[in-house]
Amino acid sequence: MLKKRVISCLDVRDGKLAKSVKFQGTVDIGDPVQKAKEYYDAGLDELVFYDITASHEGRGILLEVVRRVAEQVFIPFSVGGGLRTVSDAGRVLEAGAEKVNYNSAAVQRPEVLAEACRAFGAQCVVLSMDVLRTAPTLQVPSGFEVVTHGGRTRQGIDAIEWARRAEQLGAGEIVVNSIDADGTRQGYDIQLTRQIADAVSLPVIASGGGGESEHLREVLSEGHADAALVASMLHYGSHTVGEIKGYLSQHGIPVRASPSNGSTSRGK
Amino acid sequence: MATLPTRHSGTRSGLVRATRETYHDRVITIVDYDAGNPTSVQRALRAVGVDSQISPDPDQVRKAERIIFPGVGHAKSTMTVLVERGLDQALRGAFAQGTPILGVCVGAQLSLTRSEEGDTPCLNLLPGTVRRFPELPRELKVPHMGWNRILPRGRPHPLLEGLPEENEFYFVHSYYLEPDDHESVLATSTHGIEFAAGFARANLAALQFHPEKSGPLGLALLERFTRWTPTC
Image (tube, rainbow over all chains, first blue to last red; front, side, top):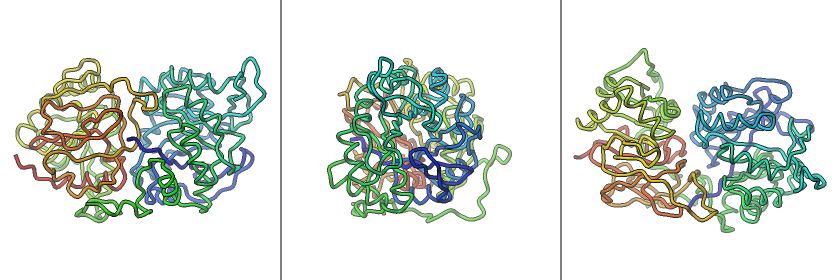
């Protein structure tokens, strides 16, 4: 059976690893390539590189980081932040990424998802959405509103509807990032993740709020997520990949055996 | 650590990066037919200390010492490019003359007789059909994307020797391999149904998953291929 994935998100600013708190302010915390290699060696399943400043400062994608990662890391990884066109995506894939993430650009021009799907296949195209809890309105009946530009711009679009639309357009996967939970380390937004996972037949990756291994267990079971993104838990060293996966495995969540937790050594 | 025994423990120093300008006649040739990114396979080979060249040229494929036939994409469009470049005949020729060939993902699928994707006639290196996953319960999504375990089947194959029971490889596919001869199935995996994760016949081995994206186990499998001597 397919394993639930543990994915780490590396926010990159000016080629350095950064961590944001509720999308307000960031601190640099190291070299993304070195971190990526470290997590790969520890048995992480997948990586996401997100250029956090590209969207509003118009920076290019960090192709050099992507190339260096691809030389050393042999698991799938995706790149997002500031991708606008199909040719942006082409450059990232050529540099060695497996998938591309569209966020703000897809809200502004949803057709980009269909274009990228035609050019590279749905398995390459990830829709990433930032979601804010709001009071339910006619426009946003679920009370989950899509926001863009690092959480600063409300779009008046219902997140559940947007997920369905992205699936029709040809996205292969959806990252659901809760702005409310992001950086709090108090747990994922289970209700949001579950509503979206139940609304589409695409794999859904929960993002924002992971602080304890139990938070991942919760969102991968009750939240119906196929994968969970972790950032600060790993970046600040409070947890290792092996500890997280060991916990999940002990609590009945099927995960890929992690080389660091010793469970794979028995062999034949 | 969950790795197959390998000959190389790391990257050899002083590797010569094979480029289109420095073709050699007797090296691993990665078939380039505009189907995904062949450099992923090249990078993975480099990580286990093995040189390779990426080539769209049928003559290079005929002369190759070993061939990796990777690929991502739609059966019909990828098959069209293969035929346009004369790579279909080159691959059939290489197979007939005993060149070790490793098909990966769409490359594995195109090695069978026919694909249900676009009802596409394929290379027919091994009789078989590429089938669409049937309607599965809602929680089982198609494409089958992510890490899944494989279970070796049939006679032990050198590529999978010593594979740990707890293994996972990275899959991304909506169609699966169904060789006519079940004896040729190397290993199976399960996603709603049990399907062939790979097959082998003589000098051809084919994998549905992506060894180049499957961490240390995948790299070890690729390295195995680079020194595999098929027994026909």
